[in-house]
Length: 279
Image 1 (tube, rainbow, N blue to C red):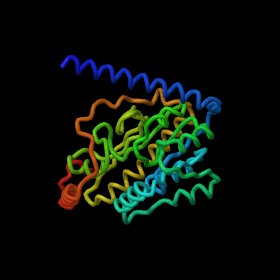
Image 2 (cartoon, rainbow, N blue to C red):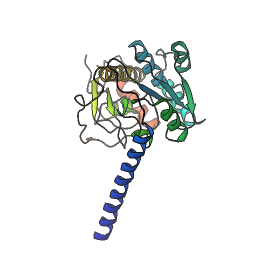
Image 3 (cartoon, rainbow, N blue to C red):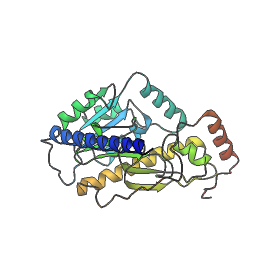
Image 4 (spheres, helix red, strand yellow):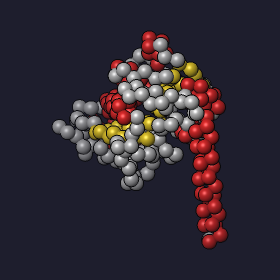
């Protein structure tokens, strides 16, 4: 037992050292990044190809006057299409924001596509453009070296309240487990939906709301919180005074909701048995 414990400790030290080496390499790679200018947000926007979540978020960021230095979309020929289709079904009947390609074209934004955000092609674009900040608009889990590249960090908006509801299909699991529904904007760190919280807000759930409505409301709120975070960053050049520790989650990290779970959610909402209605 002691020998195994020592091996785990040694491995943790090696991982920590490797992460330190990656950060050192990334500092060298982003040498020459422009200094922060008050009122501006030098950021890259990463998203799965034409994801509805990203389309809404980019629309809100542009409306607030924050144009990304580059948009990097991921299209691996499978996951991006699956995630897009899944999300479109979740919010069916609600309006979709214009496609990312259309928004980029209308605003003169460089829009590139890579097969995977965590691989070399994405890093090459970041090294070329040198954004100070990376904004995630609906992606797979982002890892190093991408996570360590931008000088001022990577931020994400999650359609669930953190730390209570980490993982996938947050509105579904929130209803299923009677967790309050909302969205959270947070700093990205290794792990799933971990990192300091920047903004966190509940959705006022009404008895007339359907599951699709809740998915749409959290999608829109995520865009709003991200826009607020970027607005704060543009004024301050840091999130230092905004960050709040997440703490431990009282729940497991959730995975995609099964058909059985979704049926239970539909029934619970139809029968108005969810515990956190505002009316």
